[in-house]
Length: 142
Image 1 (cartoon, rainbow, N blue to C red):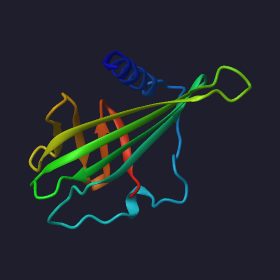
Image 2 (image 1 turned 30 degrees about the vertical axis):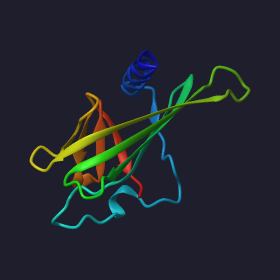
Image 3 (image 1 turned 180 degrees about the horizontal axis):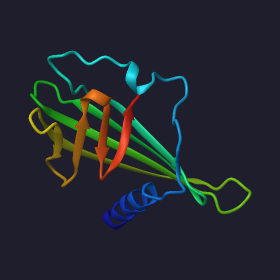
């Protein structure tokens, strides 16, 4: 399972740097990233963050959900679902999905959510209502 995760992360990271790829709005009808409100005393709020990319031969949808763990200051559960579809023929290909979960601690100073049980760090961009994982930017949608 770990090789699949690493391969998909590398594929998404390499695919996202492609100059021919275009970024899609993954969920029309949801609020635009600039329309959400962050209270001034807590610039980072758990929520749902998405990104999508369509290349010549593939489409990738990625969702990260961050939820605060009850009675735990700055401790969060992070859930990531990645869906991948090859676009190599005229017919619709099956969509492959992968789901990963981990726990993280949020640091207000560095604005990073560092993985506890996995070496995965999310960079938080509260002013833009975005997070970044391996250089891939996710927009907050709820």
